[in-house]
Amino acid sequence: MLPPCDPAILENNPQFKRLYQNLTTNLLNPDASTRANHAQPARKAVLEYRDTIAIISLYLDSSSNQLDLDGADVDGADVLSLLTPDIDKFYSDLPALIKPFSNAISSSLGALRLIANAGDASNPSSAESSRPRTRAHQSMMRAPASLSPQLEDRLRKLRQKQLSELPAARTRMAATAGEVLATRAAVLERTVVLLERAKHGALARATKAKAEHLATVARGVEGKLRMTKLDICATIHTPETIAALSRYRQHLQDTRERLVERKASALEELNAYEVDDSGVNDRAVTRGRSATGPIREITRQYGDLIREIEDVRSEIERL
Image 1 (spheres, rainbow, N blue to C red):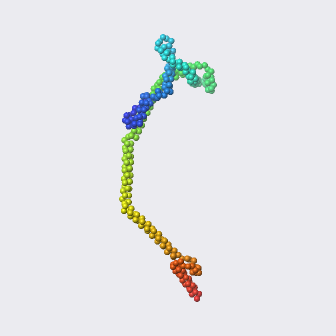
Image 2: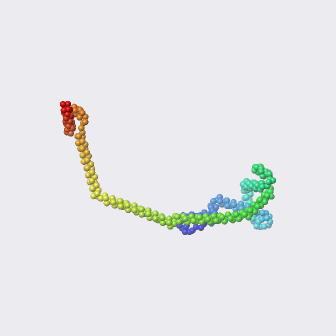
Image 3: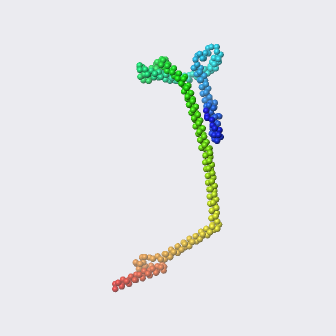
């Protein structure tokens, strides 16, 4: 069965509450069995067949003294009249059940014979125990279906154990199952408590509230920074500042144009100072060229003067 749950836990966990109510009211019975038998035709048919087989098994397992239907007992006649449709149906379905029953009986008989042979194997005088399994199986198939006294003794002991020890074992198993279910219920309850504390407890709620508060504060600071940025921009970029910047930009453009003009004039003046070096070595070629400016003419005259000085010096040295 499902363990009871604390109503406070159900109130704090709506989804778990819906699941718990669905399990306890719609899906499971109070003994934890399913309620889907009536919803599924196959389960319903299996339950009906199980009840019928239980009645037939009770009828077949009962002794003739318990089912004395030949007397004048009215209750026995009523029972026979009630069981007649089920017995007729059982006999009609018997051909389909013969093969499974035959296989089950054959396997049980083979197991009993193997048990008997295993008991006989402890006797040193038995020579049949050393034969191969296939040969023993063939000998068992040829042997008559009679049980030895040792096998009967074993069956009697097994029956005694079934009647004495099996109920006690079942009782112990039921007690163990109850303990396991109780432990499972405790673990489930503890798990639910821990889950409730971790997800919906005071610490979790405080952490969540703190995180939401910090997020709100961060959004407020971000908004303040945006407002401060807009205020600074409005303070800096006044109409007077914009007009001054425009004038300064115009001044820079004018200065740039003047610098470009000065650069052009400087380049022209520099070109006027250029000298042809080939004229120093070849006087005729230099004199034949036409002057292109006053600076070049002065340079040409200076070169001629230097050459004349060199000529005079050379003549003095010869003298």
